[in-house]
Image (cartoon, rainbow, N blue to C red):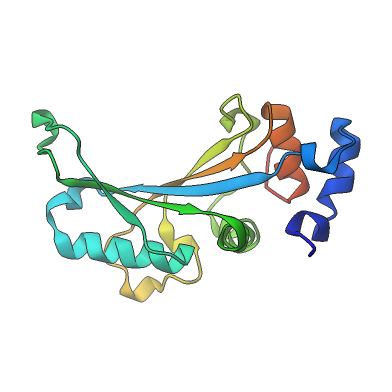
Length: 177
């Protein structure tokens, strides 16, 4: 069975660039995590359901609602209130989402030049912020009442940022210099 990495010829080039001979030692994408904060809609159940519906459309699976662990009076949050939504994608859904993100959604971002290499966390994982969820073609702009943003974390098995950068660069992730 061929993998996505073999289809893109990433393994051969990555092995040359990093000097890693064994195929199983090469870095790979392990998971993609999508997080969205509910923000001002924390008490509006209809708005939360619309955000859940939109997130499930763009990812292909239902998000999990995260609840507040503690009450924070200054933010008017009580313990147990919904504060965010999260989705963890793996394997086939992860690669489908990655392909749509890089080839379709990112070119639709206004004034987009790429992401910085400084977005890596030191262990080869990258977190990017998307301001408008309507950049995905699955979302119909006519039906959207509230535009929301979310964070996407791409977790890799890379040992450091240079390995993660090489992997994502070979998989057509847009970086600027």
